[in-house]
Length: 357
Image (cartoon, rainbow, N blue to C red):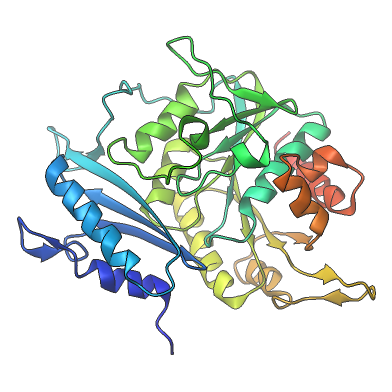
């Protein structure tokens, strides 16, 4: 059996040495998450201490090691660090100097009723497309909604909503950017879109606390969170910090994608997050001859839902109009709510609304 790209990356990082301990960074536990998608490699390194010179060396050596793997086309490395809690042996997130420590408060304040994660255990399955169109569907049925783009590996919302501005601030809180009557906040708003998402100091935790607790949300029924793909420490941190009310898992019917979906189901179950259902995205397309073609397989997502006793929300077919509107920065549900694909999303929104409201 051919070695997977994830295994190749893990092997390559196993050759990267921390010269203080003379051990490799894999055995030291610095490699916390690896996610690959058609040549794109996302990796999370978690440093044990703040030593800029040493950490920079490990970062550069890791990047070089991954870059030498045949078939790798893009590398995103997120670096985080933990510091010791003086009162216990537990590790607590280190907070970036620019972000003051925030009291521990639930995101679900009186201004926000429910928080729904849109997740995919594997990248490239259309999670962000589902997120933006589901948010638009909520808006269409009269709900007040926010779209929170928490994908640290590659935020898509600025492109898919065609937002080129940065959020304003009163010095205390950020103001969400409103587009199509949807409140939006994205990690991509605060970064250069042409620059790789490489975090060298701020913890993922502090960024998410900023977006959830230091944004001036305005009386929302739902926040839709576009999660980063995968099931590693990064996703666990997001789920624990944001305190989700429910999750939707998006997948294609391919067997390799379904293996990751099963891990995603187990992750949310372990966290006690209610799984609202599984979505079979890119399930088929209709040819010019009117026939239905299931090029990625058939029924796998539904069978997985049945295996784990989760709800199957439905299928979303491949449709060129969906890709076209996304590239233009206009969700299909917004452009044409009567389109057959839009009606699927509106059905999802009604079903989720009936669960909570």
